[in-house]
Length: 105
Image (cartoon, rainbow, N blue to C red):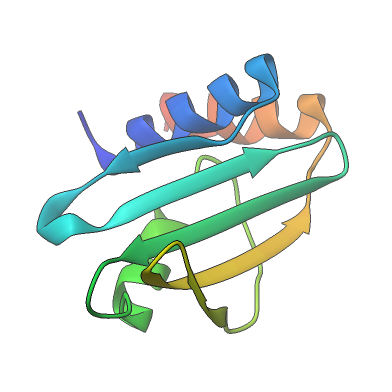
């Protein structure tokens, strides 16, 4: 499964279940996603060392729809170091259009 399809599954599960969705990727990177009707929040976490900006950009580049976001905030929580950012959640119609266009092209 590609990173893009994994992120799509997490985004849709968070919207549907109204919960935070997390997955552990390579090298212990944890991706945490929380989607509300107003805001989408993304967190990247790792124990012992902060995720890199390259990892942050890779996740945003694989996001199921276009995201414009400045540099993430550096945070420490739950005994882990992380990067976090949030943006306005697009409407369902816009998300579906972006995803459908990506799948067909």
